[in-house]
Length: 334
Image (cartoon, rainbow, N blue to C red; front, side):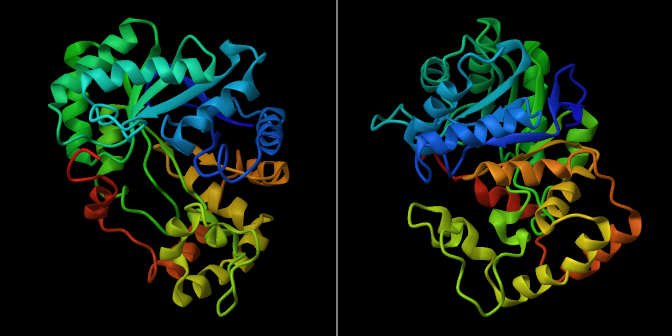
């Protein structure tokens, strides 16, 4: 495993992080989830990402039980707040009440006294940003988080939040956007802003919901057990990529992966890690062998010729419009 600083902070994280968005507590049984976490630890992964909303809070509990007994100082645990976690009007968003209650719930489920990074899962247009940042500052001052971060905020929102964090003397160090060779919307605005401010990217979906593994073949039914056949929600996220022109383009990457001595999945993860503003790529898994495969992307350097060839193949189907960052953010509180 290789390690990187998270932005310009002093926090060092594994450049492959393990996340449990669509798996733990929903898609796979807890024994299988624990086996995947053990595989991640055995591979040298020290950074684990989750959120209170994943599997209706069950994902945090699964992760907490799986990591129990590990040396806490040797791990970096990240979680998030924003989406609804209960039926009440204040069981959601980034208002002070929900933030302060949510961090306590997350710590209880994760069985830890603190998280290393506490992240705003989306931007809350229904709550003054000052209120949100003051609540996050109090979470840090209470020793319940060391750093703060955000997920799927636009460059303008990141800049405004960072300015307030500086005033409050709180370390705002991370951005967690979707990023892959097919979804490149952060490159034009979010990445330059974060480079300027010293914020690092911890990116999710580096293999585009599994599409960049090449397992979805043009004209064929999705493989049994794949995310595209998941009736619990996974299919909704992968469907955008199951267009013939996308699947054809992905198959054209096979010779490039072979040239680099990588699988397509490893190539996809290695690709996002070539971006100097990316501190870590989050991988998920339903089987331990998936972890073992994807961690081999750590420390890989792709040459300029290969990167150029990938760009030429994927340019007709890759999404680059920075305005689409805001698509992942609701217009009002959920």
